[in-house]
Length: 371
Image (cartoon, rainbow, N blue to C red; front, side):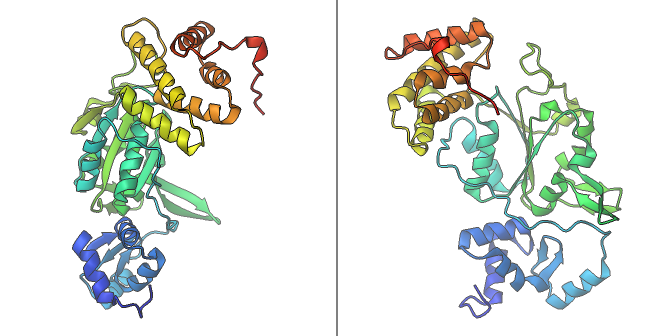
């Protein structure tokens, strides 16, 4: 779109204000461009005179006023933000289930309302957040938390660039300024250093004490955390490395969603969608895998075994089958991660579920080499 387009600058501004108000962020603008089929760079050039700071525009003031504002405020030297689209791609294999609709409503509302999602590994916690943002054309900043994650990793800090020390925004500040959804993935692996997020989890923004600047959350900013536990540690030792999180930190999440594995019918649709994408036409195999996993999970919940087959592992098997064209090998290489006894019991159980299946003979199955 050019300035000679049938839509003039004033019409463009009014359309944006109708959706996002007068003060907008780069996230808002990218969502607007995506919904209208417009070029982001072209639109930002047309709004250059209204830009108040990096990634922010005020459509109520005149360009001349904005220019004076920019001259009056000179921020400390900082690395320029990389202009990129942080809206996740839609995945055609995604099948919604569980808490997805509720989670999507929270994100769609653009109300600051942090959510905590807990559940066993491989049941789609992170994937559901990504796809909710993809469907809503919302930017997502994902941060993978570890025991080493600290304030510098999250908020930002000074970096040496071309011999000069400059401030570099962390992912949390980027999400705040862009009005994006901040995803704290595997948050129960964190140490008490994550308490630097307390004021942010209250929706109050954060004061960057190292450069003397207060960052206020832009419209639409929200925080979602995923974890295998509820922040109370792992008593059974399944999730080694998880920690007991500070109660004041946990209390700042108004809602907690308990994510379970999808019901068999839904899980079968997921596997069939993945298989279709990979060119695998075998719905019966998908059903057998789901039945097999369902039996294993019920036994696990009853305390009969200590391992479980996740939805993610079933997807791994479908992908392995598309590569090797051998069901037995696909299942075996994907359950090799378990101890010998568990692996053998899983293989024998699948043999009972699928009459056409033949247990692989160890000597006959080629080893998988890792290069």
